[in-house]
Image (spheres, rainbow, N blue to C red):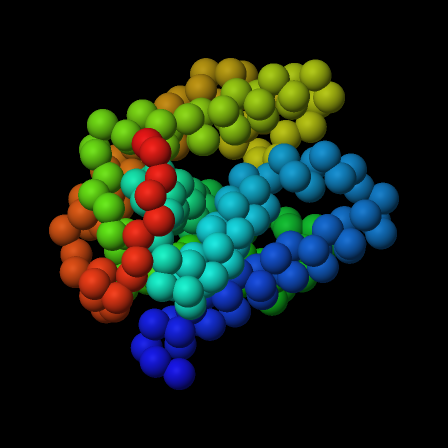
Length: 216
């Protein structure tokens, strides 16, 4: 097995383990009688599913020596930024919060292992196509849409995925400030990730990868 296919296998492994972990936790969540919609209202779960699917697709592309073009590079970059945000926010704001039925190994995998693995994957094998920094606005749509959904749905059903989104204690002022900080952090992190992806040299030379044209 050459280096390209070994790397593809590693990507597939991380993606498959992540999807398995999320599936196991979803089963536990349902067994406890919790809402399925609540489960998919956690940014951690959405981001890990997103990143895992990207890794699995990347593994297939890498194995076959294919590439999907600049649109895919941007999508992959967004998944990296989302996972880095998951790791930072959890470590800074949520590590001491009661995680309920979340299994310890799944907690470690989703909040620590995957953010590091996805970032490492980006740094080791950055995208073939340059990502225009102006695309950061597109990247920001993901967390902004999530925050808007969380606040609107939370007000409607009186349930919030994260305590820092719940206005019950200090009102909407602190919540909106936190959202602003997260949004700015996501934009800055996106710029950093995109710049690194544009500047770094890949472990596997791009000459080994055949491009598949994609309109963007």
